Length: 105
Image 1 (tube, helix red, strand yellow):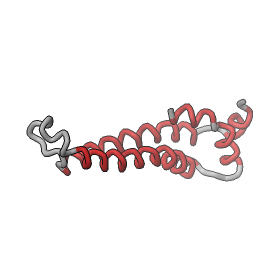
Image 2 (image 1 turned 60 degrees about the vertical axis):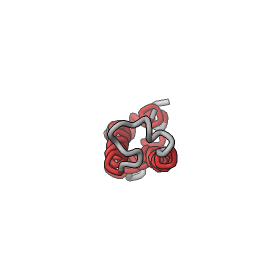
Image 3 (image 1 turned 90 degrees about the vertical axis):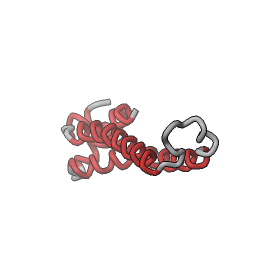
Image 4 (image 1 turned 135 degrees about the vertical axis):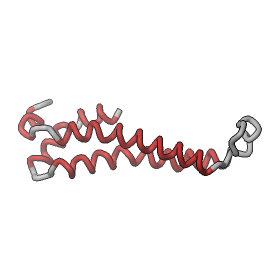
């Protein structure tokens, strides 16, 4: 989804590069825009899992429903996946030639 969004913003990225934005700046901008919804979802998901943990405690075998190690590991895996999913299109966008990016429609 983020790759499609970056592809749709090719003209904007070309303008930013023509005005002096460098590759690392573009990568940081796109990655942060991609991580915002992931972090919001992670916070809401962790809150919901802690709230609903008591309801499903009988269904989970061998793990406490509010086990911080399990929740932390899941959070790290999710943020890593979201970061990688945001980084790959960002790196591709940072390699664009500003002239060809401005010519695309």
